[in-house]
Length: 361
Length: 88
Image 1: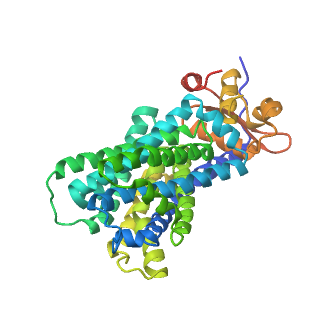
Image 2 (image 1 turned 90 degrees about the vertical axis):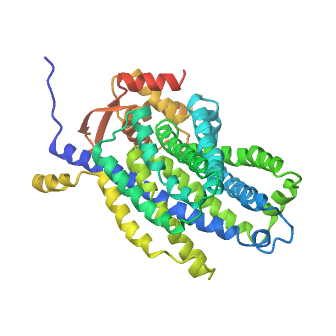
């Protein structure tokens, strides 16, 4: 019979410290992904309000059609942002000695899965969201907040990650909080094709949920800095060379190349895109890393705080720092933020454990 | 040559169990010059793999230099997934 050697008390304490440190780091990273999503939204919105964008969305001296202003410019803004984000990702990967592994990973199965998930969560889900918004109106905004729940369910089905009744309750609380914030943008309109629009927007939520859970799991094989470099490069290239040409074709006689060139060379706005690109790099990297460290249910619930950080950062940066009207913080968002914390807490741990820990001490 | 994280996961499919120091020792000749070849990064990568079921903890102890050593193995399911996605 082999002898069982029990670890010393010192080893048990050190192990507990290591585990607790890893969990806190995972939760902090997942929460930071929500904060940087808010900053990315604010700087992207700022970039798209300056320089040539101010004319396109304002006086429109170029005479752009409603389709171009509604759909095409959104895709161009996304392409400019993602391009800078990809440059940040590639530069930082090079500086931190990850570029070699980036190219090696691209040629492997996990690398291919990352590219596929980035395509689904990037241009495809974003386009579905914009089309849904156009068809059904602002009711699709809260639909998008379903993505953490979808990610958690997919994490359970695809990767056998933990998902119990308590965690589902926490996710439901987070969804309710996101819905409360999004409800401030709901209008009374009920356009024709609303049901189809809601279905398409739901596909966007499925796309984001799929990306979060698959790429989070993927970071158990691929370094998160390499994973995000794959994601941002895929998103930039596919938006620039697939999405924009397709939208240009749909819009008829549009000189898309001229518009894209103007967007990339608009001196008054481009530096804001450089900053938004850095924030996008950080938010998606932390999203993947947090999901990988905490599991999709907790990681995506923490990331879901972007529903609060989005309006908050827009209020601070656009409303207060730049004095742009219409960016005040809706009071309900503060109540929703408190509710969100309760929701994340419920996903993260069983409140009864607190009493158990007290007893142990 | 495989990416560093792939080599690390593959290593666990070839041994009974190992700690981060064992991984570093085994991969030092091929990956020692990598900037990412640091104990903290590799520990974090191992723990992320454990959180996702690719690896499982087997035991832990204090080393003679009073450092915690945690040993992990690739369980059957985890090893199958690693071998399915990462080819030799």
